Amino acid sequence: DALYRSSGNVLLDRLFGAELHTFPVGDDEPAADASLDLLAQTLAEEGRRPYVIHLAPSHPPLGALGYVLAAEETLAQARALDLEFDALVCPTGSALTHAGLLVGLSALGVKLTVYGICVRRDAGSQAARVRQVAEQLAAMIDRSEVFDADEVMTFDGVLAPGYGQLSDAVREAIALAARQEGLLLDPVYTGKTMAGLIEHVRSGVIAEGSRVLFIHTGGLPAIFAYGDRLGSWLSDVPWESAGLNR
Image: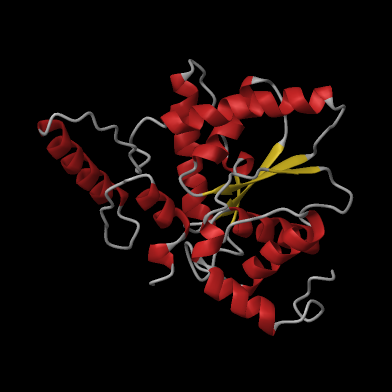
């Protein structure tokens, strides 16, 4: 819509002088990668030096290396603060964050449950993707981990109505985090992740009193691209009836 195309990350892209190219909505990552490669070839022929960040899991998961290091850094900070965790919760879409944390923790010999909250596809498909990326990533750092199905926890209970689309559960999570913690979440990734965490606590999957680390992956500018859909809900639904007092 008009607001989405004139604010948030799109506005930042334009501010930094990026030339934007669109691709049809869907989940055809190989076709999107082919489009990226074609564009990169055109730019290279013009004498420029493009760097392609592919989407499909068939490519080396270079981006996940950052979360291998993030696992190590997180544990080091926890030790310095004398903190312990029972579980981590993160968004899972490309699977780079989720797989990076799994491999990083495994490499350090640390047993922690990592709950991945699905933001793009159903739990079964996402779990298979996470395992694939994790095993590719492990090989990249000369390890041979194989992750069993019961080691890859994915949850799609707050995915509907789909990627980048709001639900009342996500709106509630965004408002709750802002009002209770001063924590800003975006509708696409961290908002859905917090909604999944809340649902896990309410359903008992995560027991009351558990020590859970919420992995905030950024995305703040996206809030403004959803201003109309968030703002109207916040003004129409009182705090109590929105369930934000629970």
